[in-house]
Amino acid sequence: MADEKGRVLAGRKRRRLIAGSSIAAVVVGLLPLTAAAGPAVAAAPVAATSASAANGRCGSFERAASLAYEQVRVLRTLKDHLVLRDQADLEALAAPNPYTGAVYPILPHFFTSTQGMGVGFVNPNPEITPGVPTLLFYRPAAGAQNYLDPFGPDLPYTLAGWGYAGQYAPDAMPSFPNDPGLRCFDQRDWFVHETGIHDFATWQFYALPPEESWHGEAAVEIPPIAAECAPTCPDGVGHPRLWDSHIWINPLVPKSSILNPGPLMPGFDPVVGVNFFFPERPPSAARSVKVKSGSGGHSGHGG
Image 1 (spheres, helix red, strand yellow):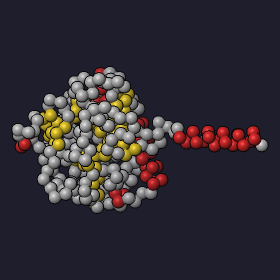
Image 2 (cartoon, helix red, strand yellow):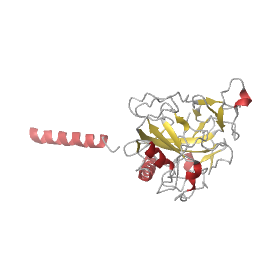
Image 3 (cartoon, one colour):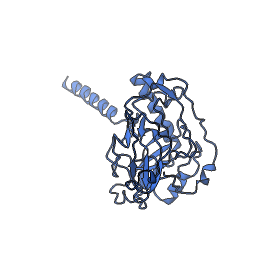
Image 4 (cartoon, one colour):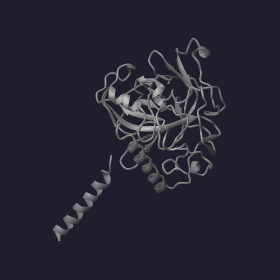
């Protein structure tokens, strides 16, 4: 009897262990942007037609299943870029992806790392295309010493997450109710990346919040220039406000949050609440988003 009880308890313990150990811009090109002339993106941009998915239509199980799908499809297309070990790997990431045609030649902060986000790479496609991230986030090497040096890479870099970004509108957030991976994205997932300047000295970020009656009221579609706030602003390149979302690799179901919930990645302070914030009045409408030509695009993301 005692032996039987021991086997039952051991079995329960094994099941708990198994359950608990489920699977694991400033437009500056790494390479000339002619690399973007590769094959067309396989998945066409999905336009939103309904606000329902952006207003919490999905239950918790449905949301988890959708996010799990998103992680599987993204990691499949990035299977050759999970670790960037050398210059050849950086160049391969900047070349057209054989599955999606996407390219990631833009480092909005060069090799400067953002705390909790890592080093970012940007896809210059102006449309948010589900399954083809706008942003890729890489964790610097363990013991990284150069993470605040824009010209000193800390190889190898390990993929930590990805994201989507597009033009901000205070009255409408991105929504993709017909897409299996992003259809449950809602007000928990879409936040604002503030308008500001990536300075030439450090390639960090200098936020320039507009005057407004509530946080997130202004669209700010035109990127700022340093001359507008001289002499306090650093010289650099600006970008407008952006809708932003970050998804972090996690066993089975990825995590959606501004910062990576895993082990802290070193870098400069992202100043959550200023540089990245949830609008004070979340929009009730949903729509597809596109960054206007000449607006600075997605190139300013990351800090």
